[in-house]
Length: 394
Image: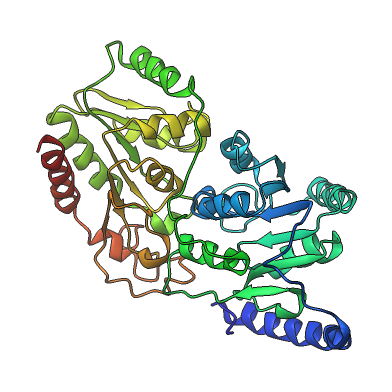
């Protein structure tokens, strides 16, 4: 199985590390007995998804598989702070553990500080005390498997082949770049039996959360809950995924002119940009960037008429509720990361000249935006919105 790391230096380093691991583990492999995963009854299971919120959401069908397959096991999820907020009330999960792994391509959270190293040490010690029997890493990350599996003492370790590391694993699925992330996550747990019916990403909202966000929206607009409203999600963790601000302004203007209440969402970091984006656009247009928790955002998305955005977690949250989505892609591979819902329309020019597997910068940018995204004009998005509106009226 080929390592799916497309940075050549990292890929070479991983191959060398895998060779070293193979040599070290070879004697043990000769005498170890492969566990029978079909009859396994682990007391404690650790699911691992230290990644962007969209990736965690796309993994959620596998949560259902594991809960159904192991109804009496204690199932823990290790994710970041945002993932903890979104899945802490999930009935499939008994406990959510938190660690904010640094990611160099994020605007924040991109350094291993002394404090973060101490937190990592305490987490590994905590996991050793938990005596985790089964570790399932959905990212296929050698670092995670080594730290939270081998060092933390997990007896059985399951993952995919993205980074190789087969010597550390008791079951390894093929990391197929032609398949969607939802399907790849389900492949990881196929070693326990059939997974076919669990295809839909899921987020569980409590009964009070939707009425609460309705009230918040009514206070914001000073009117009763709108008949139709659109959520605009222009922001991602990577600037290379951005769509031109002026294009969004044209789409927002069209929505407002056709009777939509429009809500722009994002983080507190995005707020100033979002306020500037909607400046001087007439109608019911508001900014909620930085003013909702992730659970409030999920509740807002669940009752929206339509979501328009770039490749970001908001679109994957919308897929959980089958809300109509217009997804603007270009610099990332939609075959792998599109919103996994029949209600999602993916718009892309398919003209990206960069390495979409790395998608961290564009060598052919136009006015600071990736060329492939700049070539996707607002008229195409407006056409998709009108089609959704027409289907809604039929």
